[in-house]
Image (cartoon, rainbow, N blue to C red):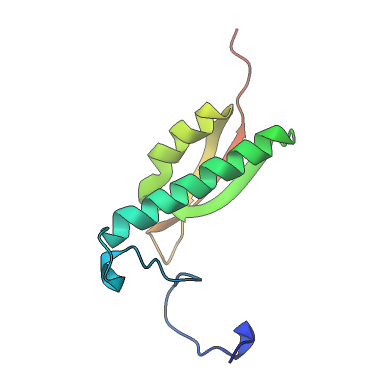
Length: 105
């Protein structure tokens, strides 16, 4: 089964590829912090790209526990958090929207 549409259905969300550096795969790093760091790093990179092309907003689905850290990352790239809504059925996930921060007087 190489076509993603032919893959068996599973409950919940899963990674697209395994993090073999995590303890669940025999690696040295704790799973949850590793995943959180990976996601924060991806959003950091994405916001840098969004800022570089002059976009004014960006929206991502993120781990709810990361929202405060992502707010700081957004500030670093000239954005502010304008919305963070928890998913109604999966509270560990939030939809967060960043917008270009207004100029300070």
